[in-house]
Length: 77
Image 1 (cartoon, helix red, strand yellow):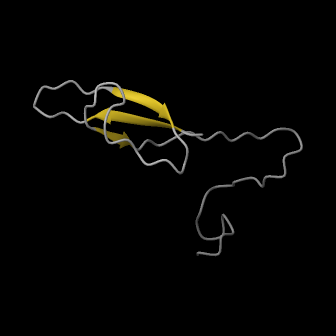
Image 2 (image 1 turned 30 degrees about the vertical axis):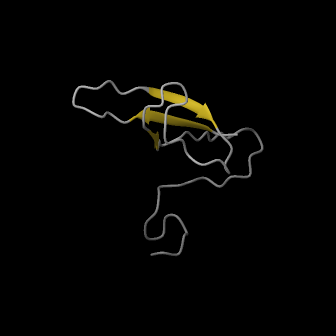
């Protein structure tokens, strides 16, 4: 199950915003209220994290100089 980040929605200027994480299934609806206080909340969209490794014997091609005419082979140029 993924872990989602939520934050409280300030009701007045100067209200403290609390962030918390919650494990939820993909099929579960996003929360609309804080599970302990009942305050309104929204799900925070974050960039996430990806890990790329290149170990011995990897079959990955060399990324080269990047996308451009004759450099990456993607066929867009």
